[in-house]
Amino acid sequence: MNKKVLTPSDALAAYERAFRLGSPWEVEKLLREMLNVQVAVVDDKERAEAQLREGKRLKTVSVPYGVFLDKIKGKKVYLLDPTAQKGGKAFLDEAVDDDIAPNRTYVLLASEAGYHPQKGLTFEGQGQPTGFEDMPDAENREKRTEGKFQTWSEHTQGVWERSQRIVGLYRPFIECWAEKVLGLEDTRKTDFVDTVLWAMRAAVLFHDIGKLNQNWQDIVWKNEQKISNQHNTDFIARMSPVPDEQVRSQLQKPRYHASFAYPFVKTFLRKILGDYRFLDTIALAAARHHSLEVSGAIKANEFQWAQLGNQSAQECLNQLVQTVLGSLSDEESRRLEEALQEASNAVTQSSQADEPPGPTDDFYFLYCLTNRLVKVCDWEDAGDTQIELR
Figure 1 (cartoon, rainbow, N blue to C red):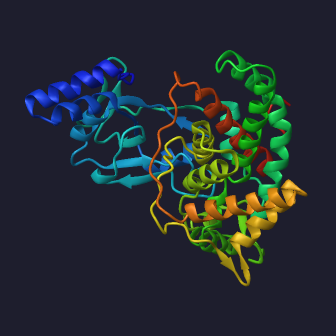
Figure 2 (tube, helix red, strand yellow; figure 1 turned 135 degrees about the horizontal axis):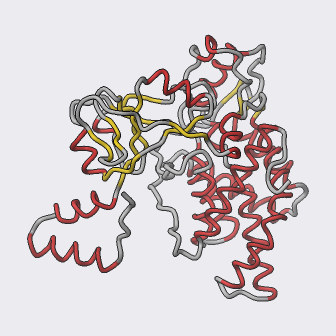
Figure 3 (spheres, rainbow, N blue to C red; figure 1 turned 90 degrees about the vertical axis):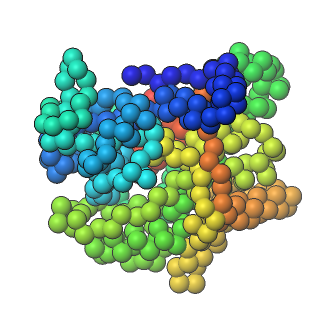
């Protein structure tokens, strides 16, 4: 079942009907009808995780969110973690009712549900699993890239350098978009494209800012010391490849980190370039470099700048930015310092969820391209390879 598209007339009609009937449930009903979850059925949780680890992908069935909530009462439900392929984490974590949200993938056991090609998904008794399919080559390579141990500075500088080549490849597409969609020409177009490309590279530069969180550093360094002989003398960005399943089972799952890129990048870009909505689009695309389910919403004090001996993560960040940007004028240095300070403050405060632009939004193209840029730079640097239009 495909998602229903909510038009302005649909929304107005729903609110008018709710007001006339004195029933807010009219609006809730409409929202439930247009929101779905993806559902897969497997014979056995452990065997399913083994196949996912081998690069297979679950076949799923789309189910209305409200229907799913009604049908799963009393059943065991697992949430699929799309980032689990890296880091040795469990793919399927048991989900409770309060945690179940739309636009996610959930897994049921064939002892309690099933799939029939003609009847579709059933929620009663023994059934057939939905099965697996091969993951597309590019996605499979990304998911299974073990990469190498990297400090935060090494990885951040690496993605910045790779972004220079890739934005050169993207420039003709952005120029065409700026001219045909936004109606810009000549010098205005050139200046705007230069600004967009710089903002996109800044999103790449700061995409892993969440890894400088004290909690994240504490966990990954404990994991790293179980894997290798590395010593925690610097902030880490990527752990060493996990040698075997026994070690993998001993590793602790670090907290999410990608969400923190949204308030940081948004604040930094607006301070440098001005109050423009397309900068928020770029920031959200960066925050979604691991999963499109990331909203950018964080709570106050979820992020605390890490400290490693006498070195603070903020000092590490400032030094790295000075290195990659090179020599600046006194005025440029002052503005950069102010922007970094405001962004550093913003990431420690609460941030509201934001919605990505839809396909009819003028900035949808920019959102998609920025998300791809961040993911590909991340992937290329981690795997020490060239992927984009090689």
